[in-house]
View 1 (tube, helix red, strand yellow):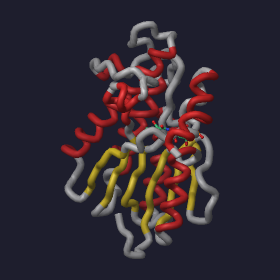
View 2 (cartoon, helix red, strand yellow; view 1 turned 180 degrees about the horizontal axis):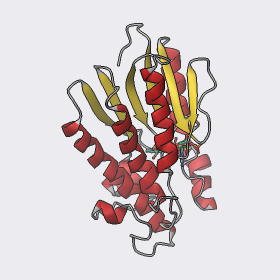
View 3 (cartoon, helix red, strand yellow; view 1 turned 90 degrees about the horizontal axis):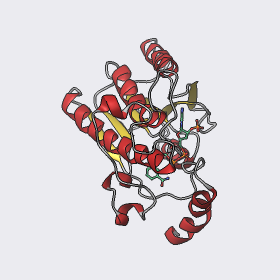
View 4 (cartoon, protein in one colour; view 1 turned 30 degrees about the vertical axis):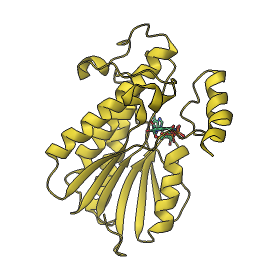
Length: 239
Ligand SMILES: NC(=O)c1ccc[n+]([C@@H]2O[C@H](COP(=O)([O-])OP(=O)(O)OC[C@H]3O[C@@H](n4cnc5c(N)ncnc54)[C@H](OP(=O)(O)O)[C@@H]3O)[C@@H](O)[C@H]2O)c1
């Protein structure tokens, strides 16, 4: 990634709200040479240096089509060199039963698989140096200190099982949905390590843990108590 005034492109998911919208807005403010290409269901920041590619990251076909379009645009020099990918999109569900059109459990598909698809699509066009940043979380620790008791710890199992709905005990429960979340974030850390071993020299990959950030849309599917705590109580504790 460059901050020397040379035009360059960062591809980003999860830029439409919460942590990602704040990050995208800062990137645009701090780096006048950056072109941002956002991928998601909803456009990211409306800005002259932002291009949006519409895709539900829970769909392999839609995600791949958006990435292919970016690769083509970079190849045709319609975009400055791509030297960054920020995989920030994430979901937390109220059960472990949401399935994508491809038959994957939705949390795993969006929080893990979409990042893998993005990096694999972009790795042949990444400039040197480039950087991949994947948003992870404290929840993989699974302890009270990191989670305030709000999210159960991860339950690791082979990815072919983790990627399928109904893998955690009592899959209809909120607890199962949150276990799927913490486990997906552990899987994202494993993914970062695997990519670090595998990506070519000059392409770095790091995980980014924002810590607890109340007031975002992450708990939008949670019960009333969770939404109230995230929107009203925790912001007071972290102010
Ligand atoms: N808030 C926290 O305390 C916290 C702590 C640690 C880590 N994180 C992580 O930080 C990241 C951002 O979370 P946030 O708290 O800012 O939540 P948020 O406000 O709900 O933002 C989530 C982002 O992901 C996008 N997204 C979700 N599902 C998608 C899908 N199927 N297709 C395309 N885009 C999708 C959303 O876009 P649309 O819904 O508009 O499509 C949105 O831009 C996540 O990876 C989360 O796990 C959050």
